[in-house]
Image 1 (cartoon, one colour):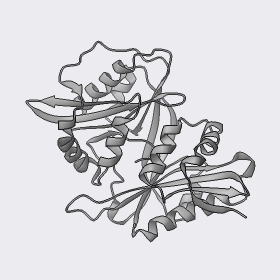
Image 2: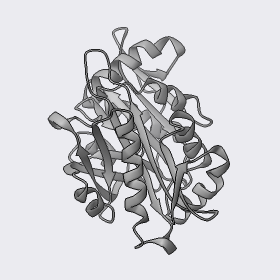
Image 3: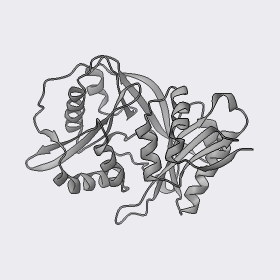
Length: 291
């Protein structure tokens, strides 16, 4: 019988073994972030003392004037030796119940072809394509790039306000956590004394990760992306970015040597066509498990 309960810090090694075995990019810090920010809604499924399934629900309070309280489902994993026994459905239903217990009615996730049938059965519908771009040999551009600088403490009010407009939910705690993690880079774009974009970069197991990028326009998003590629400065360690299909950022990624390595589908179970934290101002996501 599968026992489902919240993951703790002590469970990170077992969860990390599962994500490594699946070929995912998570480091211990990624699991730690989920558990620290959402300690009651990051779940594990055990058979005896063996962790065989995981699922997370990152949830975000609505911004002022909105009713959108978004629940974002991620790290849906079942041990390869235990697939086909219904454990994925059980832990998915358990994490959805976590959301229901908190009054959440709007949900999103990024689905693989393998997982999509499970979500369709539970009322999720396709919204748009999401592409994982990879650059295996990143080539840095010259630094500095005009108008781009490191994110400072004084920028957070403007950054949070910009992200509220872009995502329509309150991701500020998540963004601050991402910016402060070891090896992270957080930058802002400025023009005429006004912040017009921000972007973040962090470490990963098999590739460094660019995201989120939020900007007022595609040109600013491209400059932010180029700046993070330059800051990466490691031509033998790949870069990832997760971007909506047909995004205007695609030309920048192509020019930098990125290719589409994986196709997913952003799915939702939500009222009034909830934007699922993606808008014309959101050029890359914060992470497939983070929205």
